[in-house]
Image (tube, rainbow, N blue to C red; front, side, top):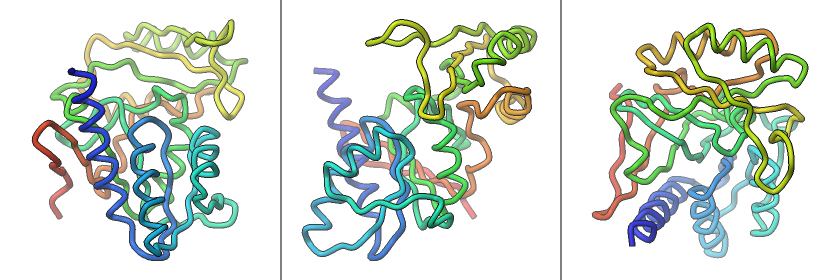
Length: 232
């Protein structure tokens, strides 16, 4: 029953986000289960006459968009997007995020940077007071031992993410490895994000703090939808 309630919240949030897309928009398409519901709603709206073009954040998003018949392009042809719809592992009250459970945080960060508006769709379990989820870190395979050592020095407990349907480490769409790093506490997410992202060999970590000013969080729950955004 709880799982059905969570799926219901995700579905409501995803469909709400899709209804924010306007005619002719360039849309960043995130990775994960919640964005799937947004894509389903976008297809319904396309059948009603809506025109849009999507820029996927991963091979998964690309394959889903192709299966749905959503037109696609890439950052090579369009590096200014109107809106990006994506999920998150955790969201705090300052609209900072932990992302990367799908190992796509580097491309998701690129799409978030390109978008004028970032819409994050989550169920109500993802809204938290203090970050507690592991921070995913995409790392060049060559640099994994070095980065793991430095993360340990920051007080973290790094673990190489292992594949589920394959032996060995998870390989990202960019050909790199993922380290999941748990910290006893994350008191200053911005400082930790900067410290991790500037380590040699790191492409991107899952802390997203720099986009709060253009972020809207859509939270789906038992009683419907609520939204959070930065007051201007």
